[in-house]
Length: 208
Image (cartoon, rainbow, N blue to C red; front, side, top):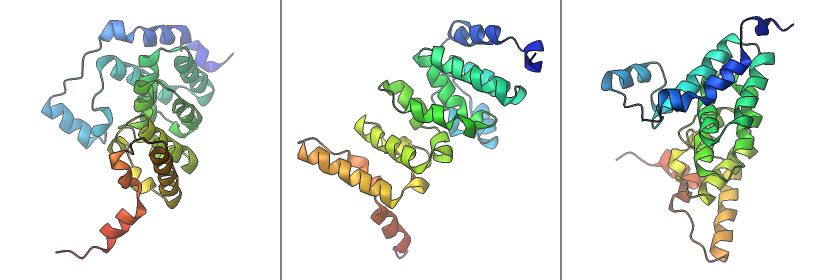
C-alpha cells in the first residue's frame, strides 16, 4: 500500500478543490498595503495580482500538497485536478505552478495548456506568470509568445520576455508579421518588443 494513502484522502482533496468557489467565493483578494508589502518581501508580489479568493484557495491547496506528497502521489493528483477541472480550476492550477515543489516536472502540462483556445486559460499560464520563462524550452516559449500576439494579448504581460528574447524568436515574429501584412491584417503594435535591434540600441546608447 502506498504510504501516502494512509493519511491523504485523494477524493476529499478533489472534492474540496472543486468546491473552493462555493466555499470561498470569487471576489478579488482586496489586499491591503501591509499585505502587499509582506508578499513583496516574500517574493510573491506581482505573482498574485488579479487573483480571486477561489484561485488563491486552490493554489494554496496545490502548493501545500506538493510539499507533503511524493511525486508518485502529487503528479497524478495534479493531473486529475487539471483534466477534470472546469476553466476556473484549470486557471488556478496554472497560476499555482510557480509555487509547486518540483515545478519543473509539470512543464508538459503547462506547454499543453498553451494549445487552448480559451483566452482566460491561456492568460493564466502566459500572463503575469513566471513559470514559462523559468521552465519552457525555447521552442515552446517562442510558440507561446506568437500565440499571445495572435490572441491579442499584450506582450508586456509575459514575465521574463526580455531575458528570453532570441534571434529565433525575432525571426518567427517577423514571419508572423509578414503573414499578417500579406493577408491584409494588422500587426500587433508591441511586436517591436521582440526585436533584438531594440536591445542592441539600448545597450549601445550613450548616456546623456
